[in-house]
Image (cartoon, rainbow, N blue to C red; front, side, top):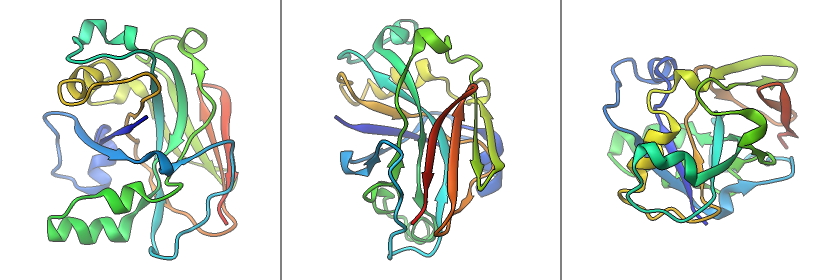
Length: 204
């Protein structure tokens, strides 16, 4: 099982980090399976970063194997959605960017991808306009809607399947909206997909 993730897929978020960044194709990176944190278990702040930030994302689960999938057939290849957090060691990311290095360490460290239970897509409808949001200590800090994606899920699947064979159980983190920020010990994160509360865990 592999975890694919899309960077810079919401314009407002791109502007908060890099006002000049307008991607012309999906920006793809990967996380290892050991990044997953399930069942709302607590997230322990790592000792190698002083600026770990949350990025709330809709996650799609691949339901059958595919390669070079055309965009019009992409909906046949995923069956459920979840809510996830792409925890990012922002201080390390800045250093890697300055040095022109890869992002794996700042994005793929252990437990950097908390993920909720999956909801069958039949229960939530398609991904054309699905709202989601994150509350931090009871206050909403991120609000997004999949209609604001630069590249929608079908486009992402068609694109990544040119390079990687998608297999049953693979996950795709689809990008984060504006409002990312740091976490500290004692914080409580609650994530909602449509009107369903799917994430509720603490930082320790």
